[in-house]
Structures are given as C-alpha cells and as structure tokens.
Image: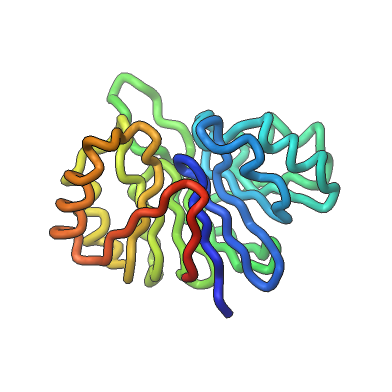
Length: 213
C-alpha cells in the first residue's frame, strides 16, 4: 500500500496511509498546525525542536481520538493532561499506531559535547523498514531501511558522520530532516557530498512537499 510522506519544517514528518495519519516530531521549528489531524503522534526526545507541548496539546484537544507514543521524559510532561492517551515506549518495543506498525530503536541522544549530559532518544522504524526516523542520533536499526529520514545538519554532527551513517544504514533513499539551521548557501555542499559519497539516493523535500514511499 502506498504511503504518502510529507516533509514539515525541520525534523517533523507526516505519514499518511489508507486515510490515516501519523506525525513524527512536531517541534517548535515546525508549523503551528504540524500535528493537527494526526491520529497518532510519535516524539523521539524532549528537545524543543522535536517536542512542542503547544503543538501536541493543540492536536490532542482538536481530536479526542489522537494518541501519543514517546519516551518517559516527554510523557511525564504531558500525560497528566490526557490520561490514557500518552504511551511510554523504549528500545525494543513494538506497537501499532494509526494503522502503522512501529518498532522502537535506540536509547541515547548523540553526544553534543562531553560536558553536556546525554538525554534519552529513540528512533521509530515504520512498517517493517519503509521509513526510519532516528531523532537526534545516528542509530542503525537491525532491519533493512527503504527510506531514511536523515538528520543532515545539527550541533552534534559533522558531514563525514552523516555520510558514514548513510553508508552504514544502506537505505534505498535518504531524505533530509533536521535542516532548519542549514542555510541555503550550504545546501549544495551537503547535497553534493552526501549524494556522491553516501551510496544511496539523496533527496530533499521543501516544507509542505510530499512524495510516495
């Protein structure tokens, strides 16, 4: 079954299949309505560019059937307001959300600096590897990946690590996420180097643009 993937700003992605919608990481850099209309929302970690309490509350209040799956550090911030609708997950868990089969991979955020304590972070493998969103980590799932949502630029990474991550995951294609801090002047450099050296088709969607995966 065809899955529609829509890139929202920064790290947020919207997936649609059979009339049902799943949204990942609607954060403060994402559109205010990024999570609205989602039957299920997945959040990888607590940093505000991935977790916006305002956007989650808007979606949960707009539709009483909307549910959230996330790790405990996020769940504890919002679960009291929506009893029974916020589910805590961790590495190795599997569940179904909005008709999508989800596997949880990873435990820790990438190292920003040795002096900064690492927080928890999980990635989500959707429908047996059709899409993998790693959050803020270069997690390699123990499963083949068709479409990798690639954190292309972050304070915790350098381009050689991004290229090696694509090589290690070996996806059929990689779409950029985590790109709000990447200026238009730098985009051709990243596109050319990742595309030439990553070993997979490297693609970019503008916010609001969609594709089928």
